[in-house]
Image (cartoon, rainbow, N blue to C red; front, side, top):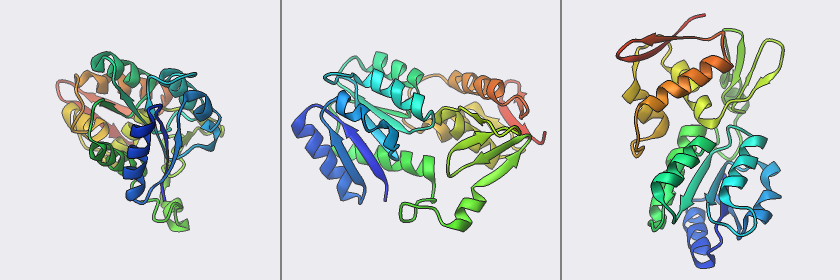
Length: 232
């Protein structure tokens, strides 16, 4: 069972969204303000749904603290403010998806399901991976140990390398398509989803960040087309 933490100060909307999410079989814990949600960051749920405008600690600050604790923690931002500005800031902070108010509760359910599937795949049959799944989720690439279930990357000295959720998803996408030439648009759809609004140059930026953090990987640029991961 997935655990979702919902932070929304509007009482009626909070109850409505929680009811829709719980109907999917997910366990939902709700917070009316950022201060109370902050105390639960260390619990590391499977997904956070954050309103930006919150009393006490706002969604931006909460997002920073969540990502500081666990850079790959999946987060969906929701906001009634300027959609373009909030979307850009949210993406810069590491959010995985964005919903502008007003929206239908069913849309949040659909986006939540897609994000959970993209991030966790089929590893959570009943909230926990089986032993065989855990073994399959670990692989060695170049000088790195990648644990798909724990969403961690460790170097040969045993130090964990901090990757954001999007960086880790892009890394997995390259791993799962090892040796294939991937178009930017193809990568954009796979990692950001069909609903992403923006330029495919965000792929280039994310590749640069992965190269900087994992210099032993061989991510080749196929000029005018995209990228390909090859054996180190």
